[in-house]
Image (cartoon, rainbow, N blue to C red; front, side, top):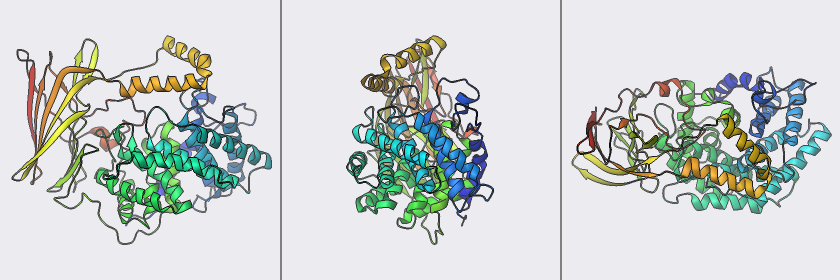
Length: 543
């Protein structure tokens, strides 16, 4: 059994990088900012409030008995926590909100996440912060809680954002000694419950299930459960755990290209926090400890600055929650012959002869295949791309599917359209126009909300269909042999096979550790294209 100290070992590798991000110069106007790109390089035009989540790392190092003795109780950490909290206070809009991606955005996510982590930091440092800092910090927490209580997220259902808001309202009420935020905490929990699939357990992220982000969502819910012991919340987390463990892969990834947001990272704290009361959470925790110990999976070492602190802080929560796991169950896919179809999520998982297959049935038949014994990714296949009239089209889109069983084989037929994908990169004049808009009429809350809806529609939701179609037949035999038969119709050029593809704008996707970066052992073959019939076909066998 891998000891719980593995979380501290992993966190230690990221801590020094995190500490170098904060401005600590006493003469600096930006003292306390964690946005090094802004305050040091001076390459950006505002300090990103989300990066102030690093305050929790400072508070944990100062206050936790598990912290390295180089840090625990050192006054310099308290001084820098004080400065960082004050800087965060100065980033708040008058209405209580914070920005994330651009000025005057009034981001639901940034307000929820930073309030959650700063709230937990204040709770840890309550007896040590200066009276003035504590006063302004609590006032800021109260204003952000009021904003969260009066607003919501309107451009889609992102359960991890809603869970962070609920967690922020919980900690705000606890700090302020009030229950006035409980109604709106429960409102956010109610949305999560309503959108959670009652039969399959997944929690909605835009238009489907995303196991990586679900681990993030479950963490905030677990912090609320620890404070309330709410029975309905526990049942929801049991259901969520039963789902997510099917997608904890042998190579350490969680989720992937078949998921609604394409993420592969894991936030382990929820499973450690739930392990004592949910047996399958203990199995998940044991699996994740082993993955971290042997350097498998997408974790804190692979994060850029935007996800560094969420994952680093999560490791610190996990370290404090971790206990002896005792006798644990195996993950549900571990036994040979294990199989599970999630029709509503459009996902299929099976273990055939120690080969683990996962298929994204409603995403064009995305395929991932692992060798369970060696942990090796044998094969991955995300369909095809077409270049036409200056546009890129991909087959990884909403699809219909059906299943049949014959003899020792399970067969799926998946049909999907090729659809265009958005590609937006800022160029100087476009950026200038964008900033002028956000700094003028974009300062109005109603306009800011409209702009966010437009961006999400363009980058995530809008996908123009094309006449080209993919019909994919996937057969998996009891001996683990995988057969793929593809037919692409309505095309005017040869399609390009895609081993890996995330077809939506998603900043948290495309992280990769070395194993994942190097890709699968076998790659999808090139289909034979007939320009006369405008059809391409391919048959591939993976043994």
